[in-house]
Length: 91
Image (cartoon, rainbow, N blue to C red; front, side):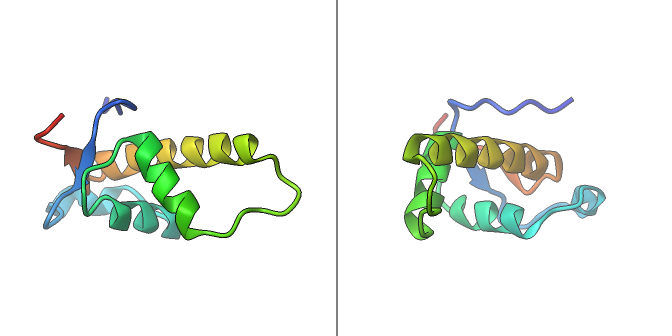
């Protein structure tokens, strides 16, 4: 089983391996993968995505940040399982 370390930095793999098609990826996963062109932790990737999108109306900022961080963590786990990202050599 593949585990994601939330405090470690991950980076996109230059060319995905042939086994990467076994995990279904969403459009959000692809957005997260694009952010990981440079090394990010779960938290820093969520902050980068939050800065790139408009805030949801009527939502508390801390709730929205927590929700986004959870979505990013789930996405990064799928990307890791699909062999689209890897632990950054700096971690």
